[in-house]
Image 1 (cartoon, rainbow, N blue to C red):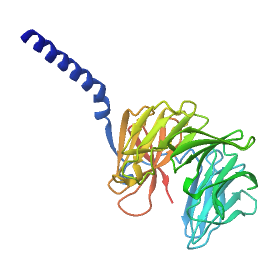
Image 2: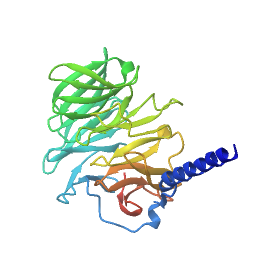
Image 3: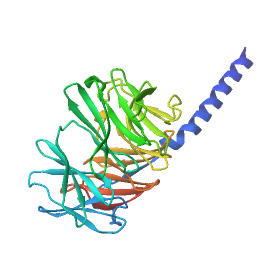
Length: 329
C-alpha cells in the first residue's frame, strides 16, 4: 500500500510539473505600457488613416503614395473611415442620421448612401471590392452587397429582425454572415440563392482569405456568452475559446489575434496579443483606455490608446516593442 501511494504521489507530481511547463509561457507574457506620452514617435501607419490638422480640415492619407485626399463634413459631424474604394475611400459620417460618402483625389465628393440608421452596419469586404450593409425595411433587416466604387446594389437578402444579420466577408458570390435566434454562422450564395448554416455560433469576425472565423455562443452582452475561434473551412474544430475575451482583429495571415474583453465585461484598459490557438504573447495596458484598431502587417498591430489628456493616438506594437504612429480621430 505504501509503495502504491508513493507511485501515485510521484505521478501527480510529474503531472503538475508538466502542467506548469505548458502554462508558464502564457503566465510569463509581458505587460506593455502603451500610454502614448511615454513612447517614441514612429513612422505613420502603413494602412489608410485620417488627417485632421484643424477644425475645418479633413483628409485621408494613402500610405502607398503619401497623398492626402480631402473631404468635407459638418462642424458637428464625426467620421469613421470605412475603407479603400478603388482609387478613393469610403467614409461614414455620423450625426443624427448617418450617411456614406466617397472621396477621391481631384474628383468631387459623392454621397453613396443617405439616411443610414445608427444601428445599421457598414463593412468592407477584405478585398475592398464590396461594401456590406444592413438596412431596416418593413419586412425585416435587409443585407445588401454593394459595389464599393459606385454604390450600386449587387445582391440583397432580407432576414427577420431577430436574426440580426452581421455580414463579415465576401468570396466570389459567397457572403459570410453571423446571426442570432438561434445563434449561427451562415454562408449566403447570392448566385444560387442558397443560405447554408455552417456553425451553431454567431460569427462576428473573420476572413475567407485567411480562413479564420470568430463567433459568439450567445449575444455578447449575455452573461454566459463565450467567443470561439475556428477556421471557416472547419468551423466545428475549435482553435481557441474564451468566455472573457473577444477577437478585435485577426492578423492578415491568420496566425495571431488581438483581443478585448467581451462586451466590455471587464474593462477597456487592456488589449491582449495571442496566437490563433490562444497562447498569450503580450498584454498592452493603459489605465486611460486602449482599443484594437487593426493589423498593419501580420506582426504589427495598431492600437488606439488614450493619453492623460487630449486626442487619442494610434500605437504600433510589434511584439513587446511599441511606438506612436499617428493621432486617432
